[in-house]
Amino acid sequence: MSDDTAAIIVELVSLGEPVPKVSAPLGEMQYRSDSWTPQEVRTLRQLFNGDTPMPEIAEALGRGLHGVRDKVCNLGLRRHSTRPWNELEDHELIQTYGKEPAATIAARYGRSCGAVYARAAILGLSEAAAPAWTPWEDAQLRAGFAADIPTAQVALIIGRPHSGVYSRAGKLGIKHASTPKGWTNAEIERATEFVEAGHSYAEIGTILGTEGFPTRTKSSLQGLMKRTGQGKGWGRVWMPEEDELLIKAYRDKASLTHLRNRLGRSVFSIRWRAEYLNLRGPHARSKGFRLGPDWSEADEARLRRDYGKIPTPELARQMGRTRAAIFTRANILGLAHAGRQRWTSDHLAALRIAHEHGISLTDLAAALGREVDALHKYAAKQGLAFGRRPRRPAPPTLADILNLPEAAKGKGEG
Image 1 (cartoon, rainbow, N blue to C red):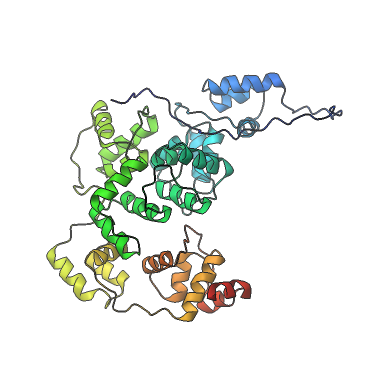
Image 2 (cartoon, rainbow, N blue to C red):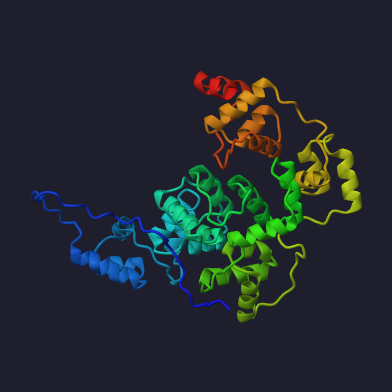
């Protein structure tokens, strides 16, 4: 049985402010009235480690709040605070979430990344596009992968989704110490995305095969998820934000599967906490995080008849489903899109040029007249990972993309 009093890890390797080495006598420096004295720094560390609120630290030191936060970040101090969130922190979180990495926000508030993620979920915030990775996040990723720490725990420490962690690891050219033989980071990233979306292991294995990856069995996917630490809580004490999310899920009859993946908790941890909080109520979604209705024989018959003949967005609207649900079910049934375009030399060149110049898949799909899902699958087969990219205010046309610098165009055609 896990120890529920275990401390929450907020950092694997420190990147605090380095102490400069003195190689010669120091010259006289001009006195600054706002400079930090050694005594102030010691007091700051003591109050910070004691979980004193930032405003109280600023008041005790006679300094401004932003100056104290800046010094905390420069010193590389991190902690897991158990204090309730106040209105000022909520207001600042609404303004900055999705624009700055969760790790940066967590350091400024003196909280863990998990607390920032949980509070953002309570406030209904989401990331439109993932912010750029910071050196601190890269350092935690390298240290966690090298130390064989479960990927789900590394993701919680950094404040990134599991799929995003594997995507970054692929770009850095590193692999987890427990990665099974024959699995690539790109394949694990896609499998993790499907798990987070609520697909069953049997469905994921089939979809991976249609995307150019090896067709995986249910048992192999189960083994992968165990190795990556999906759904393990590691004996972490429950945060107030997590309790609030669990209460909200029961009140709204929302998916507990999504909540479990988001918090990195096991099924038994969720059940135990719900019992502890005396939460009761029917679960409205018997299929977990799979939100759509079950597929009947009549639904599948219509999909076989109309898929590829009616535009997918229109077909999804008529059937009362999402485009992703239509695309996924068509893959499972082995259906081919009758209206799929052939790839011309211009389209192939545009694909590579767009990847080189940071154009998003959504903008590229609009320029080529293709569906984003199909384009994503084809790009993956070509070894091109687009990731999350912001859309441009004025979407480019095919001609605009082909007219980008000749050096990039020549590289794409070669």
